[in-house]
Every structure is written in structure tokens, then in C-alpha cells.
Image 1 (spheres, rainbow, N blue to C red):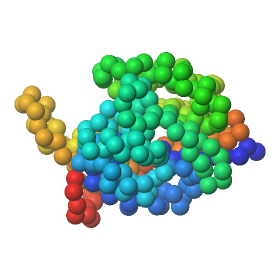
Image 2: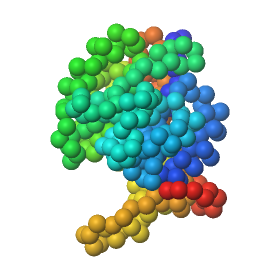
Image 3: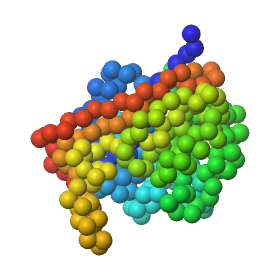
Length: 273
């Protein structure tokens, strides 16, 4: 029986409601699932767009690693924090002159080393460096230290996400998609032993349009004009995925979606967005 690493990966945390959902639901999940590490995408955790040092510190009370995506740059005061905090990652395929780091090595309580690699897609998104070639360039260095590698692929198109899953099959433990905030039903283990999911979903307001107040989203679509978006506070949802990995080989042993929903949540705490 292989030594199993249990890694819980949570979707994009959306503003204060997302942080509230973490506080409310994550302790029960941790008690039930006993994960060795908890990872969350934090790029929308401050007011629904971007992250700040104070918000990141709050999240680090509950998770061990934060990944991100294109909104990591939205709060300019966080740029220096990206350089200072190795547990907060930004996509590795942004030009190297940017602050922060695109991957990191983290120790589980049992002493196993886990690598987390953050990448961003290019289809319907910013024309940054190629995520496929960026992964190729980094994986030899990463695999020299550990075979257990979790990839957050922050991308819009499911086709690009699936293509990267096949491109990395057998070379990483898991490719987990983020960015759309809508959980997909295609969790599987690819033939080479890589766990795959197109999108893990989000942590935030349940009655919403991808975590945003539905009335504001409708106003944008119906008018065609810019509309100020705020995180939805009606109900709460926490979406994630649990991946079990053979710690010696890095091959995924199982992948299972996890979701907790409070659709009529009347206990929203006072606080910022």
C-alpha cells in the first residue's frame, strides 16, 4: 500500500463571503478528510478582485498555500508582498521581470515535499508567455526535488485546460483548473497517472453570477455598460477537490470533488467585501 498524500484544493475565494465560507466550512472538511495540505486560489479574495497582505494573512490561518491568476495584479499594494511571501504564488508564465514566484516547494506534516506550480492560459486572456513551454522549462528542476507536483491552471477555455492536462500527463500529480468559478464534472485520472479537473469552482456567495451579485451582472449584460461589481452575500458555497497522491511516485491515486452549500445563509458576518 503506497504512502498517500491527501491534498485539498479549493476554488477561487471571492471577497468577504468567500473568506466567511472558509471559516465556516473548512474546519469540518479538514476534520472529515484529514488533508496533508490545503491549497486555495486567492486572487479574488480582497473585495472580489485582487488580494492584499491583510487578506492573505487571514487566509493563511486556514490554508497553507495560495495560488492566483490574472487578478493578482489588481491591488498594487500587494506587489511587494508577492516578493516577500513564498506561500503566495502568481502564474509562472508571466514575464520574469514581474514580482513574485510561479512555483514553490512545501512540506507536509509527515515530511513529504510537495511542489505547487501556477500557470495561466492565453485563450481569451492576456497574451503572456506560453504555459505549455513554461511548464516544460520548469518541470525538470521541480521533479529533481519531488515527484509530487500540483498544477493550478488558471484559464478560460476548457479546451486549453484539457490540452495542458494531456501535455503534462505522467509528469505531474494533478492539473486543476481555476478562473471560471463554475465547477465542472470531469474529474478523472489520465492514463499516465495525472489527476485532472477542468475547473474546481469557487468559494463565495451561492446565489450569484460567478460570485458576483446577480443584479449587477444582469445590468452589465442588459445595458452593455460598465457596472461596478460586488461579491454576492446571499448564501455560501465552498467548492474543492481532494486528490490522493502516491508520495513516492507522484502518481494520482484518486480525485474527488467536494462541495458544501448553505443556499439560504442568514448569518453573514459584518465586514468588508
